[in-house]
Length: 114
Image (cartoon, rainbow, N blue to C red):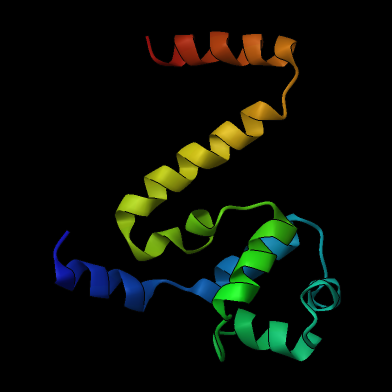
């Protein structure tokens, strides 16, 4: 990827929208996230609306709170990270499955790859 492509991805990536999407998916309110991160709900709102950014410390706490990896949280900044993040997310979900469900998933994957 050229430097120009990376810059273009950076400018188009809507980090705040991603944070909000993850929060809602996890069933959390801005207030709950704020309490866990020891910030104000207004700060979370500002992040979600693109008016401010998270520090690395808060990014790590947010990723832990929501069960996402840092690379999946910010992975679209560099397209190569997106695939790695998806692989890790899939692996994490598979680890949560029962042995029987893993066998079923394996059968589905084999059918999809034929």
